[in-house]
Image (cartoon, rainbow, N blue to C red; front, side, top):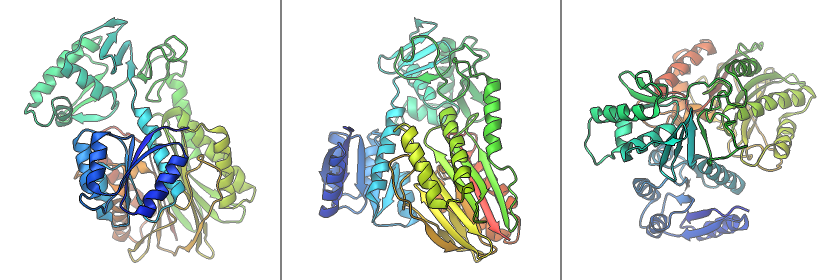
Amino acid sequence: MSREHLLIIEDDPALLRGLTDNFQGRGYHVRTACDGRAGLDAALGDPPDLILLDIMLPKVNGFEICRRVRESKLDMPIIMLTAKGQEEDIVRGLNLGADDYLTKPFNIRELVARVSALLRRRQADQTDTYRFGDCELDLVSHRFLKGGSEIALTPKEFRMLSYFVRRPGRALTRNDIMDEVWGRSVIVTGRSVDRCITTLRNKIETDPQRPSYIQTIRDIGYRFETPEPAPGDASLSSGPSGAGDGDDKTVAKEGGASAQGISELEMRRARDVQMSLVPAEPSVQGLDIVIGFEPCRWIGGDYADVIRAADRRVVLLIADVCGKGLPAALIASKLHALAHSSLGAGHGLAHMMQDINEHLCTYMDDKSFVTMAAVAIDLVHHTVECLNAGHLSPLVIQADGQVRQLQHAANLPLGVQPQAMSSQQTVIQRGDLLAMFTDGLTELRGDDGKLLGQDRLGGYLQELHMAQPKGAVAQIGQGLEKILDRAQGGQGPTDDRTFLLAKPV
């Protein structure tokens, strides 16, 4: 049974009691506060594993609590609970450091699932040991080994290497590195970063003049790379020292080739198989469709598809497996098989989702789950059925520019627990644009450094659609790709990026 510590800061006595009873009944330790001042003191004085935080609080509001917690360098997940649904409140909370939000009234089962998911991700992120090549960095004992021999690192070198190994594949600016290694209160220049990089390379690289790990990105900064190893080579991995079967058969942390014999050629073939499961140019009479699919590694955990159901409806699917790399890709391929089998047998959306959910609850471990949205379109009557299992809401951008969300938060993610599925009935007209996407889009940051977010992404789609209302969906897809590339900037992708756009014609 879970023993994580939760702090619930909420001024509604009935809701506070209900939340406390629900989480205590599931084995969590729960502390509560009914005003912002008491909540802030509790968060800073004895930091919990996760905070459930109301925004509208007496004495100190939730925004200020979130800001103060993050300024104190505390990284526990924060879920904001708010009666407000306006974009500015949600964006403000996320920009201050909140990890998620729910708008009241909410489904308690969804909240429990989100709490569980965030705590699992935090536990996975709290890795003590990182291995790459013949190097090992132990964050607990503060030791660095190369070829089995301990190499002394200065405090700045250790902080810098720790910062790099936790963010493999990401472009890090000199300002990012200065803030993390020296702190924002210390005034240093980019030259200080470069000098520290040079001394660190001399200690970790086999050939510092041709570095394998710390790569220079011209005019930007640096990136920590883990070269694709040949079979038998060690690769960046995480976990307690000595974990596994006692030898160097550690799977690559970044989902690449591993010492267990997964070669680059095999990974390329796996990528080809996964790409073949996503329709490259879906063709449906009466429906203009485009799919954008870009795994952040060789293979990924996103899935998108277009399936003709036995009842002659067209079913559009999009899903996101919690996790990345090979394990997530295997689950994504299973989604493809289960969806095609169920719909081909004449089952409806609810039956299909329940079949997938039961399979995942039976065979998938409790550290993972799947979010999925399915939209079935009857092109004769222009009716739409939407069933959303914990996924981002599909959007419909109408011909007049109005943006509306389809079903949201009605069903739990798949693989969490058995559940009955409910769907939404609506309509879509010729000229309307349907957009489905994964959080690899919404969690990108725009030019201003703020998360793209669902509402902001919807605004971009609205602009693209209204700019060419009679244009092909492929043109809108290309415009969206440019926006996403600009938001991603010089950084390597940190999550799979998938979208599906469709327009009745």
